[in-house]
Image: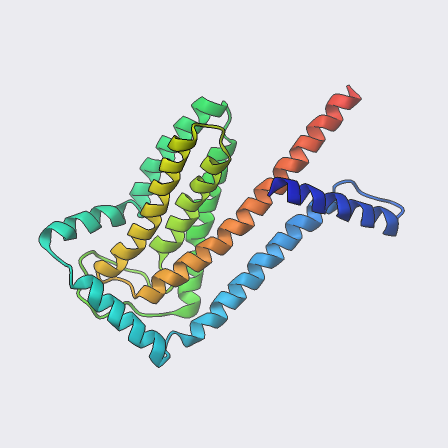
Length: 248
């Protein structure tokens, strides 16, 4: 992805140099960031438009059938398993995992860049989820809740945060230079956690399946924006550092 972004910025630079006599070297990066922001805004608007079918007969029927199928497996043992899994997508679970990953990243790379990026993705995803819940204002399912909940239902905060946090970790580990087998194993574990956290919310009776799908979509949009933003910022930092070295 970085090569494609660099190529786009090079082409954009050529166009801007042809159109403007007073060319600002930072302009392509600013435009790229602005374009990424527009992409997210458009994505959110599309996402909100799609929520209009939540009350349709098709979605209602699918929600009911999938929910009935999942909760049919309830048992005291599985209740504990899914309560543990859902805690991995809760605030305290993220605090513990973020601290663990943060220490590992700092020891490996001797800087806080990945730690700050990881926290940024998680915090802003959580805040945007609260905003979306207020806009859409969907009540929780009528099924018996096996865990306490206080906020609205759509989109699922656990699903959105899971794909934002674990999805961003997948992106980071995919780009790390490490043993291929170990990398694959870690990515599969994170992918499983994203799916398991989503299923746990339906199993515990606190979300419709469509809440989970909506959370995954919203989280995926957020991941795209953050990856583009961080890539452009990293390219800009590298160019600035190189320019300073050449001047020295």
